[in-house]
Image 1 (tube, rainbow, N blue to C red):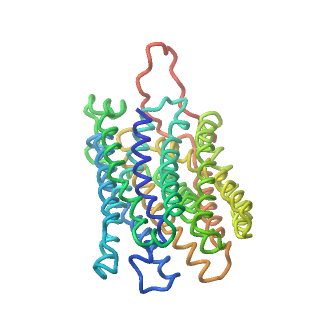
Image 2: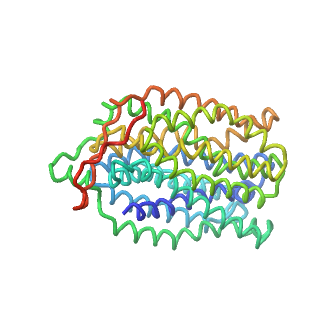
Image 3: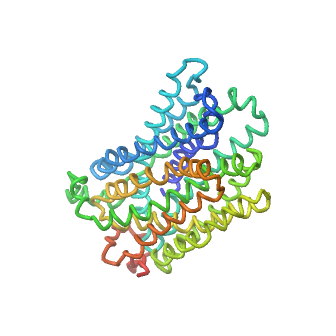
Length: 432
């Protein structure tokens, strides 16, 4: 059940991340009259615009998930993402249809953002409600782990294409291939998600006629949960997107590595994150969510600037070490945030609460992170300026986590126990 949801999330994020890895080629194809720096800024601006639609997706799909069930929304959001990603792959460039090309690109990215706005809250809710209480942190780490795997596969596809085709063919038509792959991947994911069963928690709400009819209104009673979710999301978004989407551009355009070398370094960093994510989730089950989150936030504050200075030295070994260190401090925060967000809201408004608390800050801080980083460097000429931004959002997240208290957690209705289980499992510790 959890693997099925994770595979769907993998496909969703392969689709969404493909854009970031070919941003340079997209900038030239859809904004040819701009300078190279303006092309890159324009491409990342389109990347960021899609994030500003995510809150609308969260407002629509979160309450829908709490009203009609987790499975139906999981199927719907994946279908939308796969279709729009495939359409980007066949979209004519500026040379073919002029100004209409970037307009359609923005429209398709906005639809993608709308879909992604429903994916996180719904998938987080689905996995948390199917997980054993003792292993909810470990199970919830599947959300960022499957997303990271999707990003890595997208990166491997782009890396292989660039190595085989070369930059000229990639610019002419090769950049379209990662998007076209979304079609068959979407069909596979749709088949898997159609076979899923809804969660025990939602089935219990239906059986007792306690499904919330107005979750968007009801969730406003959980202001602390929404506030803590938003504060945590600020660091979640910036740290994750710095490593998984912006870092390849930073290493190639700012530091001076070839695009394939830069992408390889990021892929290695992502591989490190894949190892650390479940470990961090398991540690939060044992020692509490708060302890792991505080440790990770403090690590960001202390190490972000040194890591970016290391990345900027121009050494390949330093680039690999830097991305690995970024993954090590990022993964614990990302992994544990997911379980925490699910536990901040009761069953009846969980998807709505996670969707609302997550999508607005991820849009403002996460989606615009590549654009802000590029802008800061272009404006100041200082290569490690993005790390200052990362430190600032880490402070915000740390404050939010320090305000967390046991009473803020509402728990999750446990799934049915196997016949051999006789003792109730305690809820995961908060660590406060």
